Length: 176
Image 1: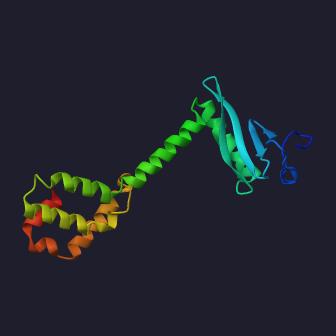
Image 2: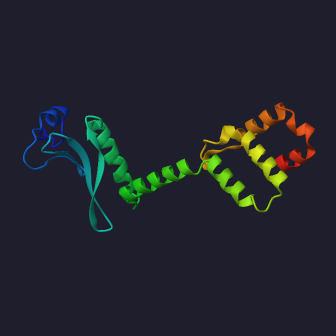
Image 3: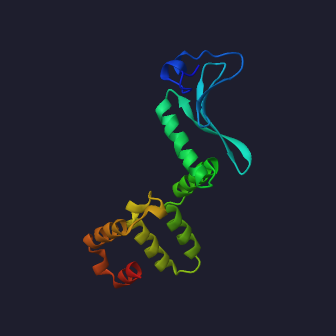
């Protein structure tokens, strides 16, 4: 039961008893705690977007506190005021994160190198492979997160080895 103000309290949440069916304890603004028959407690947000009623999972109590759930509710409601669907935003964010995880420098470099295998002479291909090997410090970085200082750091390490001074051909490939 919520208190006299209609808002949930930590005591109310802890004392909520599971029943035969999921019970919903409402906090306001679409936020509620769903108490499952097995005793688990899930934060949910009920909202409408484009004329459809939707629900958004906000986390599991006690990992997500009442204050955190209210903050998540407020963020979702801000998106709704802007005309954006919070669940679609979450899915898009998850897709971007997955894409960034698979689009590392190493993956892109390997793909490029495999495409160049037929176009390059064997010696040139080997030099390109060797040069990409020198950039191994970038391998695990998502391609979208690589910044100029990262590239400069790799170039300085290559320069420190003085390998470019020995082979003008490699210097031309590296600088082109």
